[in-house]
Length: 202
Image 1 (cartoon, rainbow, N blue to C red):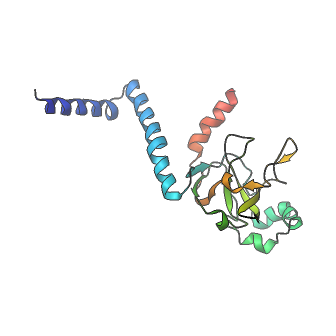
Image 2: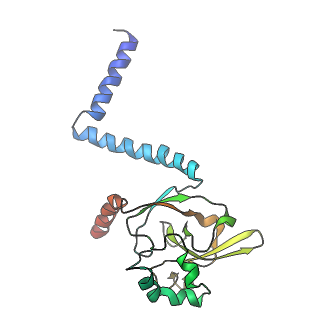
Image 3: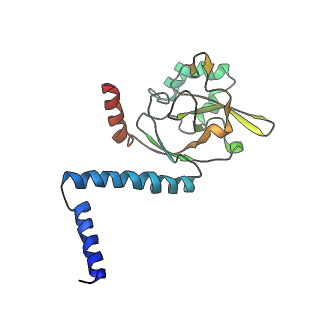
């Protein structure tokens, strides 16, 4: 048998093992390959396309959820925005006026720091938790050549405070990963179901 035929035979055997075999080992190797493809090919490729190091995020909490219609939400939370210089008319025109739901997948679009606007939903890193936060911009300021951001979750009564420190104020531009682009409703529950299960056992 020639070397070429040997190679073809090995490739065919490998292919049949990966995609046609129903053995537990075939399934395990398939899962590992899918993980590697997603992590090292799919994510970096879309990161380049969307100009961000994190092209997709899953909404993991209810902090952006809206109960009922806009007026019901505003009656509950509007006073905070009014006290911070934001009018109802401004808020009505914000993107994703009905918020985001737990389990939504968000496609993240990288932006230049000066392109973010109050009302955008941004994704940013913080030192107090490993996963990024996805909240709405409520203030953008420029100090010399640097932009500083403030956010708030639509479904939170106030900005997040950890150990007396407001982590949603004075967010530096290098900690912002991008803004919410396209929303894919609820598909993230495919992953969150397992996350919630592991939480229950921990």
